[in-house]
Length: 239
Image 1 (cartoon, one colour):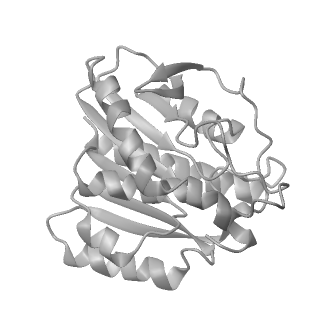
Image 2 (image 1 turned 120 degrees about the horizontal axis):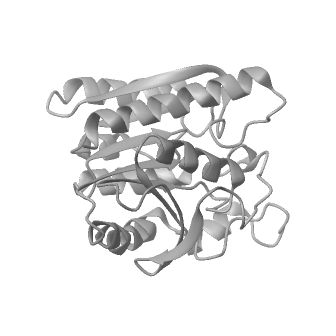
């Protein structure tokens, strides 16, 4: 995730954004939206900017409106990446925030959600969060996965996935360029036992689903299309 692309256009974080609320789940502060009576839960796993991103919370509310109980945990423990901190470039920050550790942190969150009566859990990850989701998809802790402009995800990761997976990528992306996305697709095509697809969105860049400009009509339209794909995938497989 080196290079500026993962970290361009950072959101203005807002701890009070969204229609939901923050509560403790599985030992982590988590933004929660939707009916706690829903038997179907979705985890949204943030990019390096964390769970206070207003557009991520807005998406959580949108997924909740489709009938899911949505949880956005703070896997960064109150320490999102801050581009303005020149003493701590992203490579240094990542040493404190490995996706493998976050995948372990996700287990008690999933247990906490299931203790509320939830019977099926899906997870979507953005950039950094996509690597966390792929780890959960390998161990079948979730019923379905969506990766959005993934970072760090290898072909071996995709080979190890055991649940239905949708991969939504960008045409302009140094972290998961179209050539790599097409290799993911080849792996999924060869894995007949796991349903999955890869979709490459034209004319958008890494991060476009949660870091778009409201003034850019085309960017908003692409983000909303990806959001709809995400909701449709979970409606199909988290039930």
